[in-house]
Image (cartoon, rainbow, N blue to C red; front, side, top):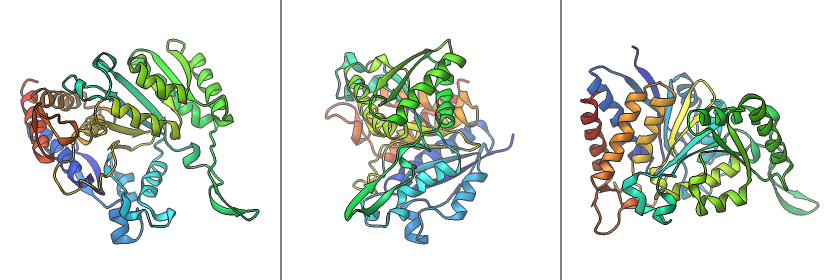
Length: 366
């Protein structure tokens, strides 16, 4: 079997630190398999690319991503580049590569690992057993709609962004959500603001039609985004698969991450085209970059999602997920999930080492 080609963008801030640990997990899988399973090639993206090339994404970087079997990304951006013109800020590379690769569906699981129940700001009885998936539309909506920009209108400086969704855009992401639900609890909650936004009035209509015609075996409900934000705190276990727009998904997934204890724990997968992109949902955290304290688990779990969704390596993905659970059960914690007097505080590298050791032990039982 030919080695899978993975394009690696370490990114900015803590990105290179957490990506290094995740790539080392891939090497461990090759080690236990006794063959080279993966080939990786790195390129600059985001602020790191701008510093060298004066653009956040070069043609070479995009070509490398398009020719790969999957893409692993750290994080991009930071205050250092906030003064740049909007068109060349690091985040434009992230939006651009999603669009260029046709990645219209972002999968963000929110799972509470049993050893971290008490790390959640919510009461134990609210968070125990949470296992939900948010499917966020990724290439449409207000982040990409035209017209946009800041301009003078009738002598008044005016900022403009446009929320646009077409029927095909809604249909395709709805199908992703329904297909996922069929493999889970057969329940989808579609989140919109149909009472005031016409674009999401269409969203609700189209999602309902797709569900009724193609997925009658899946229970579909609709919820306004402000109510959903409240319900995620009030009763998060009511949700299984949530499907929503680009903007609402961006906000709700960060909320869901904190329910689970730390944004440093949650991975994501961006799918839709030939090449999937995998990344932690946390940012570049420049305040802790270079200190060796960042949590690498979200990036390592993103690799597990890569194995599952791009490579159909479900056994290896399960080893990684179980390895993370075991390391947490053994009491190892990075600073974001550490509580005084509970467990052992470790840095980025040691947490990665512990996961890799656990993967080796699990692989021996195959």
